[in-house]
Each structure stands twice: as structure tokens, then as C-alpha cells.
Length: 225
Image 1 (cartoon, rainbow, N blue to C red):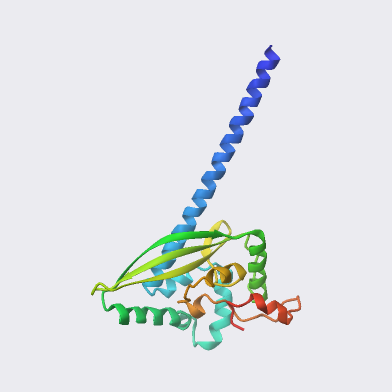
Image 2: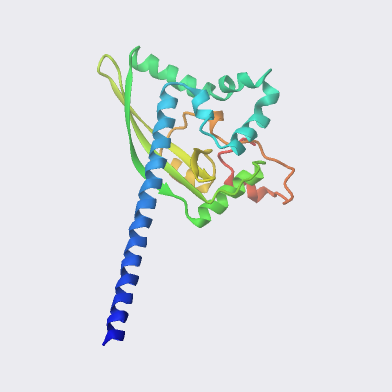
């Protein structure tokens, strides 16, 4: 009888531990999604403020260093890089001002979230490796869809869908590049690229130990060739 009681207690403890582990995992997932949403929100706010420096600060070191090596020969100093890579976004904001007038306002919401599969990550990391990004081996990545609503002082309204690519490294989420088959599949649904050279990837690196043939370039639509 005592042995049977101990068995029931042991089973109860195992069930309780299982439930606790399950709830902890749910909490982890929701916390991670909240961190993603906060990063995406900060990115959208920096975008519509035209704050290129703030956007660059959201890149992981590996992507910023690769952008630096890709652009430094086109400027006189590193301080000029934000103006160079942010020109497309600045042109977009100028167009908004022309269409909606001074004092235009915007609001946004995170409308959707795509979590990368194992195959998506392999393709994404391959893209980064082929464009010479050091330490390319992201184990998690997401694309958050932000729906932006723009309102002019005269009552005119417009909208913009922005896809925010995120990568996770060293336990933190950062802004990535708009490359890879997963991103291209979502972008093909009708989004308009407002970032240009800021997020469209890097030139191909021919220092890779792996040979690159013509077929490899079919998955590199977001990168500069």
C-alpha cells in the first residue's frame, strides 16, 4: 500500500513537472515574440523618422561590418555611410511629404509574423555566407509584417506594408537583410521596397571556399550582384 502511494506521488510529480516545463516553454515563446515585436516597432519608428543611424545600430556586428566593407570605398569616411545607404528611404519619406504635405502622421501595427523553418534558415545562412558575412550561422530568424497607415493634414490617407527581417544571435534579436527565399516569397505578395541599399544585401564574395555556379544566383534576388 505504501509502495503504491509512493508510485502515485511520483507520477503526480512527473505530471506537475511536465506541466511546469510546458508553461515555461509557452512563456519563453511569448517573451521571444514580444522582443521581436519591440525590435520591429523600434525599426518602423526609426524608419519613419528617417533615423538611419538608429537603424544601423539595430544590425548585428557581423552585418554592420559587412555593410561597412561593402560601402567604405564609396565614401570619404565612415560617417558618410548612413547618408549613402539611407538615400532610398530618405527619397521615400520625401515622396510622402510631397503627397501628404507637411505635418503628415503615421500609425502602425504588427499584423503578421513568419518564423523561419530549418530549411529557410539554411537558405538564409547560405545567402549570408555567399555574400561574405562572417559568423553567418543564425539559428533563428523571423519576418514581421507591419501595416503602416499614413494620414495627411488635409485628410488624405495612404498605407504601406513593411516587412521587417529579424535575426537572432547571442540571445538577442537584430534587424537583418531582405534576402533569401522566405523573404522573397512574402515580398512577392505585393510589398514595395522602401529601403533599397540599406537592406537589400551585399555584393557577392568570391573568397568563399565553395564554388559558386550560375544556379546559385537564383536565390540571391535581394543582394547586389
